[in-house]
Image (cartoon, rainbow over all chains, first blue to last red; front, side, top):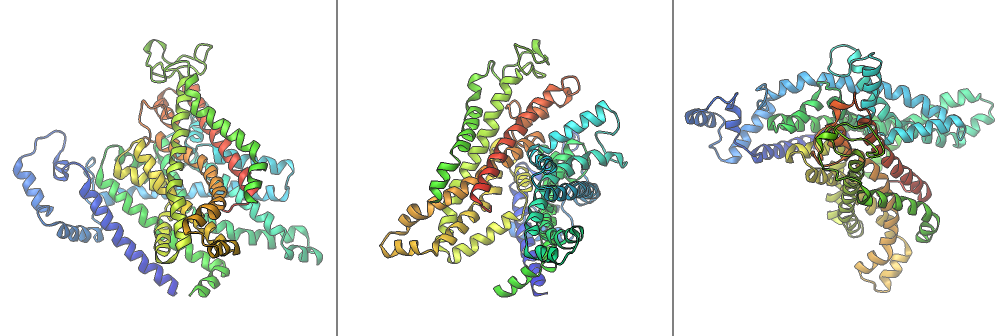
Length: 313
Length: 270
């Protein structure tokens, strides 16, 4: 419990720091925010309008007062409006976030469906041809650029065979190609990880003991080795959940899939600062929360870490 | 002993690795055409004896562009690794050897950096600084430096307690001499393995970010950027899609293989 509380306090401090950095960032952004906000389709803006908006945004106040106002708006979930679409950044983020989460989850399923069977086969048939094929898959999979794999899939399934749509969102069909691409690209790492973790467990003394007692190989593998081997895999998986979310960025751009990754890349190219700032805040908070969550889960799953933590204190 | 093992057993492998990257870095000298030369009369030509890999939508020779792109991508990756090593090795050694408050604070900062995936750091930084190759280099350095400081620090920490260092202290060697003569050789091997393993990841990072338009900008012949540029022509000229992709994959494959072999041989935990 103390650990959790400690993490929570750290999180609050982190939030304050982050808010300060992003405030500075938006202040340093080139161009006059007032002019940017008023500019709609080349309509000329009068001096009075600019002055009025400046007054409204409190840009005449000293910088620390501005930061205070900004912080107040930050905790009211008001991150300003996009320069391009003129929509509030928060609502834009929230409306696109479910699409990214969907993609992350479906890719995760693909990843698990590939890496667990391949990793297990690879370990069970160590140095046989099955193992060599699985390892070759892992090696090639970790060397192939995910976006290129996606391009190949588009060419094959969308253009040549005409089976699946190559871009957009809406139906289940739209999610299949992106999640296949990301899932395959991510699974390579886990095939290797599961293989080495299983091989390590298979050499442990308790396996020999179980064999000596005449327990069937199948039972030993399923109930002893496999369960134990999942702990390091889950730990590393939790740590790389963030990189799974970051992997969606390229895939979203490639498939024109309207998630937050596509949104931020468009914003960066068009220099739409409020959106970039909103994304930066959103993604950093998300990743920190994921890390805290994974940390707590690992403590729960693996008593070794828990005990070590006690020792340190 | 480590050093001896390192030089005798993996000499062949290192030689092949160096040869491969040397070829990539110097290959543009062999390019038959100027990779930036636009020739609208020779647009989208299929691969032939004159243009080994055909030409792109502006009539530029794809073979020359692939060669030049290798220099850009691999050269940039090696440059990034060089900068990271220049920051990471001294900082890690100092932090590990001196320890104390400096070490504690530095580790906290690195923990914070390493919590974020490389790709997110790169996106966030190019969001703040704007798209472009220089900003991308900066972003990858920011994403990577922490893991090298950590590795070097942990190597130094495990060696520091051994008797021969105590012996050196007793014999009156200065801190600098101990670091240079006794600790550096241990660090070099580990760092080299991690750098080889990272090379492939960095190449992929640069290509991916250039593909989504945040890295190298056209007309720079970077492999990812080339794929991005020629997207509308994939259907009619599929070689524009296959060749740069295979180039990326092959280069990354070679560095991953080399990294794996080196890691297994030295049993480094990165």
